[in-house]
Image (cartoon, rainbow, N blue to C red; front, side, top):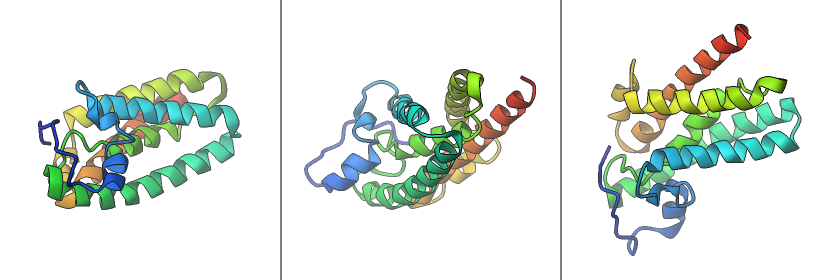
Length: 166
């Protein structure tokens, strides 16, 4: 991941800037990944209050698939402007946050399971265990997105295990 967070905006296509930076959260000067993940969590929490549990799970799964595809595309484009896996490109944090939230709609336990999934994803994403680092090295948008998909999947498995014991 690049540590450069100061990118010239003039030449990059604005659609890709907006998408790849998670609606601008990638420009947060401190912890842009956590900022993007927090916005993803808030978006999901808003949907939680409007949708039935089944509809929420379907909407979350759909958002994961669509955002992963868009993320591969836009991160690949932005790599030409900002380098591979720039910290400003954080659309991947949205997908990684939403994956463990698939296990969160559990009634009274939803709020803390959602926070647990969020925290676990961020820890696993920063630590990059068991294949995450290898996926991060893949070229283009695939590397940007797939390491977070795997980190989110690890967080999902832990949240599911925790749910079994409550």
